Length: 77
Image (tube, one colour):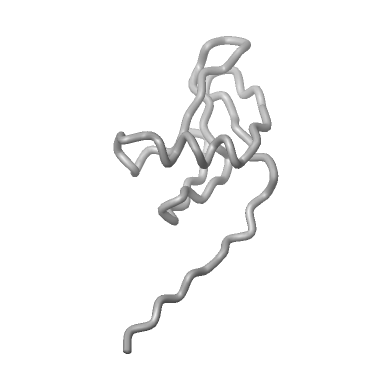
């Protein structure tokens, strides 16, 4: 018999995003980030991203684990 193990990941309520241009920090509800991650048919090697409201730069998550289990860490680059 083959068993299936489902791990429930404890996630923070909000995910911190950092603008790659002006370094502004913004917190976005994690459930919204997860929903957008699931709906995105693009390349799963890229994290969910947003545009900065201050400078229109690209905002990346400081740390985020996608719905597929891929871990994204923004290292400042």
